[in-house]
Image (cartoon, rainbow, N blue to C red):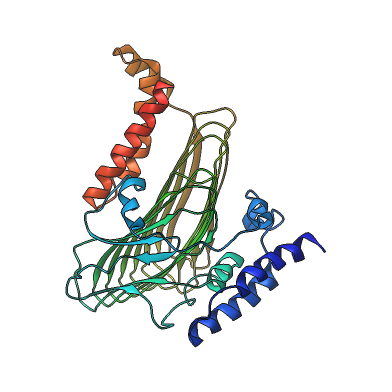
Length: 417
């Protein structure tokens, strides 16, 4: 038996062991598993994965996550070092625990009970297919047309077992609706999170999305986010990657006429951690605006990948797009691969991109030391300031404050070592 067929066989055993599901869910599962079998796991021979090997995921014989223990939702307060102060839905081992809290007018949230728009926004990759093949409880958040939901909705995903979990989220914002959603991923042990988030924003809608990934350092985290944005919509997403042994984030947004999209990210890795961020901003219509800023901090023997692609279609005249990737390397053994891309098919546009890889500013370091600050403390302060640029852009005050505290403690501890 070849390695590929053995891998598929392991997943087939897990797939067929799933409990029965409704007709719409079973139809999605069956079709997705066929796609996964046809695609197989990507390898480093694939251009989109040339710097990231998923062999450790493919070789492992994963099991299904067990039911959560009663009261385990309270673990969210202990393992998630941040808070939003808003509406919270806690998923333990992929399953919602506790009742859905009271919701403001114009907001629906809970579990999806019908197919709706699932699988229409995200790309048909092997990992998305694998997520759909194990489609379980789907977190669903919907803001009605014209609703202004001022309270953030926080989806917390906790994994407590060495197993495979496939979180799925569908976020829908009606025309002129305002909505803020935060996703957090935490856990303990060596597990595999394969998450998919789909976002549909109607005409004139405003959607703020935040993802904080702080998985176990023994865990694998693969995630895909797809956003379909209506005319004159405003969409912002912030990706914060702090944990995980092997992490991959695929983020894509398709813009309509007059749409504004912002993609920001911060990744901090140490030891043997590896994080890969692939983003795609597709300007499909004219007068679209996009801004993208991703920053990385690497230490130890860690690795990072950034691949940012901006596509400007032939009809997307008057597009204004800017992309920047900055990396701070604190160790001689860390490796960064960055690749900003522009694909422009229109002639009346303004598009820029850039990438930098460097170390701490020697002059700034000397200045702080000349003011009586020790070298380690000075390095910590400059590193914190580099990361703070992204955190300052978070509009949920309680989340921003919590992350500032986490980062300050993280760099302070590093300075003491």
